[in-house]
Image (cartoon, rainbow, N blue to C red):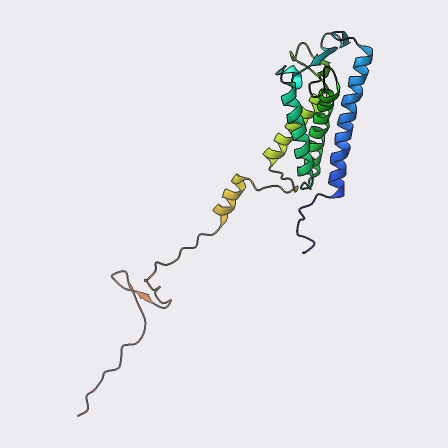
Length: 223
């Protein structure tokens, strides 16, 4: 195998980037949740920037942004499946951008999954701690893990639009492909069965070309 041929395994740098981003996302999520649960009572609020940005402590049994409450087990299983899928896909990526995206998704997913597995009321059905609230912008209350999850989805959309694959290469756009085809010289092939006239053929009155060869010598019969 030549040195220029891409490998199918992720580099140490890519895996380290993914792990670092995941640890940072997970640590920020769990750290802020610990701070909120120790300083605020459930249902309590603190104005950070007036009424624009508040810390409002609630426990959410549903998905991100307090959606679909009452389906905790489903989201616990889905989060576990996402985490496993990221670990499996991580061995194939060689793009730092994809590593950052998957690291944010993994860290955020594990953050909320930890709440569902370890918090009350029971294992697998624990309520997620939410506290970030923008009353004038969003009706939902969310947490740091939700921020990383949504941000990772935005980065995934951007990478898809740019055509950047897991290996870091960029796929040619359809517009560029069509332009490349249009720039290729058109090479017409003569129809089969019709021999091309010789280069030294002279045009005739009827549109055909006659060769400039001399007429055959007169044949005289032997006397």
